[in-house]
View 1 (cartoon, rainbow, N blue to C red):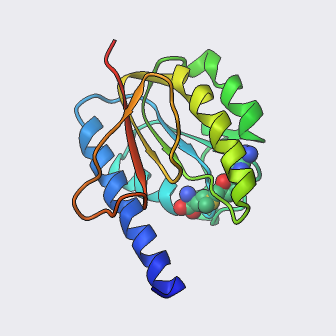
View 2 (view 1 turned 45 degrees about the vertical axis):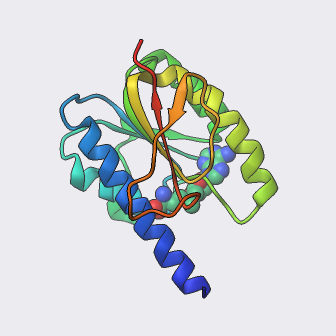
Amino acid sequence: MSRLDSAIRRLQAQRVCLDWAVAEIAARPGPVLELGLGNGRTYDHLRDRLPGWEIFVFERQVAAHPDCIPEDRYLFEGDIRDSLPSALAPLRGRAVMAHCDIGTGDTALTAVLSAFIGPALAPLLAPGAVVVADQALTIPGCRPVPLPDRVNPGRYHLFRLDEA
Ligand code: SAM
């Protein structure tokens, strides 16, 4: 498979998983978390699918397309290792969905960051919240959810926090 094929499949899987999660939470509005703004593609997709919802974005250094930059009150700028814990006060137990897309070319660094994110993300989630992730996270209290048919195993990851 060429790198182009692989990139296209990854983006297709990402969109299928995001749309699955959006359908899951449609009837239970609440804050949505976007970890990794990048150039803003998936943030823009969530905005489009969830108009009017609160989407809180976590990004080390904003460099997104100018149309895809959240208002300051929805932006946690800085290293996720600092900003996720700082979001506990306003968001503890409230997020109905999180999308984690923090992978970079540095596999070792991404693994270390993923190991941090699982436990740090869990206390922000509402019971029954769904998590869509580019990495195989270990999130206390969450179980993996089977992927939609069109997504190959390992291409993307879905989790759900147990109901209380
Ligand atoms: N979802 C984005 C999109 O669709 O455009 C792509 C996100 S990109 C793959 C990963 C992003 O995670 C980068 O913008 C990077 O700056 C961010 N990131 C990586 N490690 C981070 C960290 N420790 N703290 C905050 N942001 C981080």
